[in-house]
Every structure is written in structure tokens, then in C-alpha cells.
Length: 179
Ligand SMILES: Cc1cn([C@H]2C[C@H](O)[C@@H](COP(=O)(O)OP(=O)(O)O[C@H]3O[C@@H](C)C(=O)[C@@H](O)[C@H]3O)O2)c(=O)[nH]c1=O
Image (cartoon, rainbow, N blue to C red; front, side, top):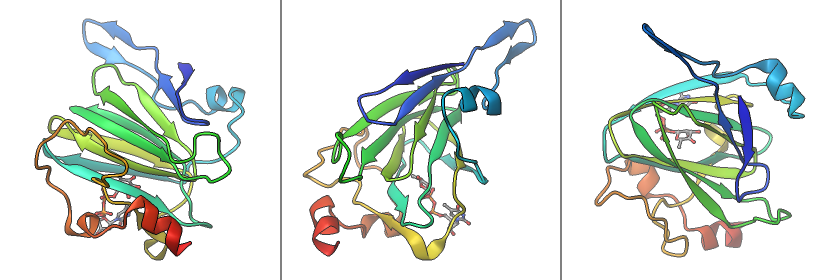
């Protein structure tokens, strides 16, 4: 598996070695020792899976400390535009985001550390899987509006399906007014 930098500090892509044969294919989606060699000293404590119909946008979500989550995300089937937004004021890439076009064929994974907001758009019917470094904690849930004009995110979907909860999330500038 190859670890590649992105434009965001501490966000990286993980490209697995995929072994194809007449039965199909095989790849390691997580390997403790490979991650340790990269200096990763955290532990994944929860795995999540969701299915999204084509045209769904979920996010942008994060959990507040002490339940902040690092997430290792991947698409099992389908295709997703995945987004990480740096919310760490001390970071060189604070306020910046990057979109990653990932699918169930190339198996590319994205690691999004604690301190980022995360969201994704399902460009096809998609099964999405992610490992988290902290448990779900309802009281710590927080987020930002998926279509905040100041972020101007090109989700590649017109009139997406968005949960009621996500439609009520605050704007980026309001989040920092509240802080
Ligand atoms: C996230 C989560 C939700 N739930 C429950 C709460 C609710 O009844 C139902 C659906 O929750 P949500 O609407 O929050 O699901 P969803 O919008 O898919 O939330 C996820 O979005 C992506 C973008 C992320 O980054 C994740 O961390 C997570 O916030 O599942 C859990 O039991 N455990 C969990 O870890």
C-alpha cells in the first residue's frame, strides 16, 4: 500500500496493492504495521458503513473534543466525491478543503485526521465504509452547511438529497463567531 500526500496538511491518500486473478481481486484495506511505519500511533475504535443513493450529499460533519474522530474512508461499491475541510486554526491549510474522487474499483482510501470536517457526495449508488479513531458521541456532533456559499464546493450534483439535520448546519463564518 502506498501513502501519498494531498494539498491538506496531515490528510493522505492510501493506494492499496490490488491483486487480480481469475476469481476477482484482493487487497488489504488496513494493515496495522504499514500504518505504524508511517508514524500513525492512533487506534481505530469504530467502523461504520452507509449506503447512499446516487445524488445524496452527507456532511459536513465532525465531532467535538474529546470525541474528535480521525477517519479512514473508502468506497466499497459505487463512486463518491469525498471532502476534507481543515478546521484546525493553527494549521497551514486552515479553512482549505480538497475533494477526492474515489470509487470501489481503484480502492483508494483517504485518511482525514481529527480537526477536519468531512462530507461526501454519492456520484453513483454507493456503499461507503470508514474507520474512526473515536466512538460516535451524539452530544459531540457538529457540522457545517454542505452548500455554504463561502466554501463554494463543486459537488458535481444538482439538487442533492440532503438530510433535514444537515440542512440546518451552520455556515463556516458562524461556526467561528460562536467559538
Ligand atoms: C455517525 C453515526 C450515526 N449513528 C446513527 C444516528 C442516526 O440515527 C443514524 C444516521 O446518522 P447520520 O444522519 O448522522 O449519518 P451520516 O449523515 O451518514 O453521518 C456520517 O456522515 C459522514 C459525512 C461522516 O463524516 C460521519 O462521521 C458521520 O457523521 O445513525 C450511529 O448510531 N452511530 C454513528 O457513528
